[in-house]
Length: 333
Ligand code: 13P
Image (cartoon, rainbow, N blue to C red; front, side):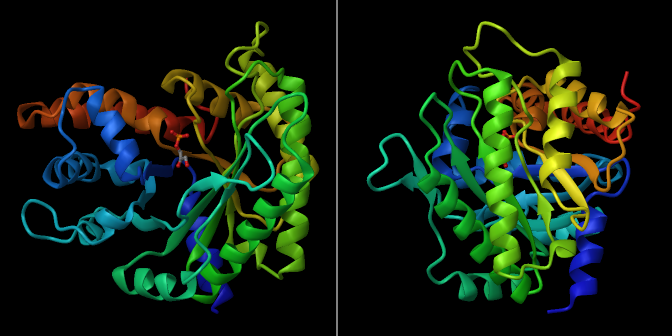
């Protein structure tokens, strides 16, 4: 493992003004997105949509990397060029989602454990050959008065660390993604408490398994109120709580933290990131984005499955990408 190379890639992914596009929707998820614009989820439509995003003029000014799904990393663009090469020529680093999804955790109703460790060493070797330089593994945690259980927190931390060690062995930067879900009526206070427990457990496990933190990135949720909580934390409160929680849990050796949007509206996701980067609190890591829905909702709608709307789709994507790029330095709005 070349630790300097891993560190350089991790730093490039959080370069000032830039962040990550998560375009790694699984087949059922992208079908759901396409259903919302009455477009069939065919291989060609998925390629056309994603190629539209990747070739948006000057996307590389705001987008440092793209997380791909297995199909996309093997796919050629409409002109015959592999999509990985299309990204590279735009100055964008290709990444890959490698987990096999969150499955029911035995003995723990309502909780999930992320699977995909079997055969992962071999899959990493192939993905590295295909051009992937970073990867993602997502674990999810539901919040109620009883959840998450200690078991759910422990097994997901264990799997995240095993994945991270295997990624680094293959020369690939692991993004570790523990997502405390926003579904439910829990308060921002509960979200903060759970996020803290999840992150403490994750970093203890990464240390135990000797993962090189300089060659990793963290992709967490923000500390926000549950979707159905009657009292919603303000933008400033979310920023303050999130940075406080991260300062308590994330070692200074981690180069960057790239948030997921998790179902927040696109504008709110940008406002939250911007507010965090405006806080005076000292921070050893960069705070950036790795948004799926918050970057794609607008271009998906503008495109609506029609080739004639390509430019409208790209314009909508660039508008969100630029806004989030500005938020990485606290200079949005
Ligand atoms: P969202 O920003 O839509 O939450 O997607 C990010 C992601 O990659 C979730 O795993």
